[in-house]
Length: 244
View 1 (cartoon, rainbow, N blue to C red):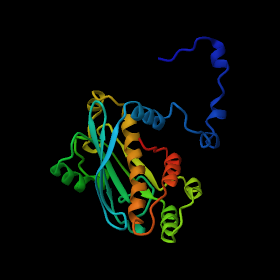
View 2 (view 1 turned 90 degrees about the horizontal axis):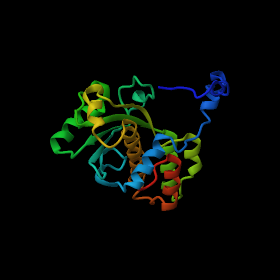
View 3 (view 1 turned 135 degrees about the horizontal axis):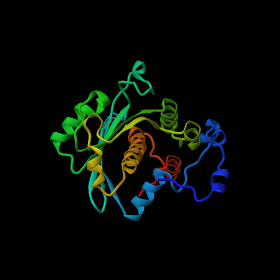
């Protein structure tokens, strides 16, 4: 329950008409209280281990990727499905029915039967029947401009310009994130007995997706030229997905 310590405290608050302007909110930067930074501090402090257990993508970056995330208290898997998306299906609206990639965060191991169930349902998102061991589901679309710029530069034997990413802001952009029992996934009561907060789960799956987008870029261009480690570090900083 909120309570003011004195009348002067409320008098000193700026009015909503000043602080809630869209142009002001749009210029706000992440702080130590931001969920992503809270997650990164937790990962670093507890020395989480993240390993790529499956990376079955073709030369165009389509296929399956699985990341194992081991924490002091538990293990999770981020399962990512990447597909070829027709131009007429491409939409950033929440009511879209197809996406470049769909992904889910799972508690515990991912056995073959679970993976098959997820492959049939996670790409459908709201239209699928999600598994109760799934904590979070999400989807994202790529920036066609950045992908073409990055691949084109690498094909020419050059390094991509990080300024492209700064201008557009992403390689993949998440269009929705679902948790708390929606569409059959784990209810909040399941999350309550785990060491992390729901918001951290949602940020964790986004971090894994961004990391996968960088690895997919490297895979697509394996036959051309590898990304310089310095460039990957620069992109990690831009995306807020530093290596652990």
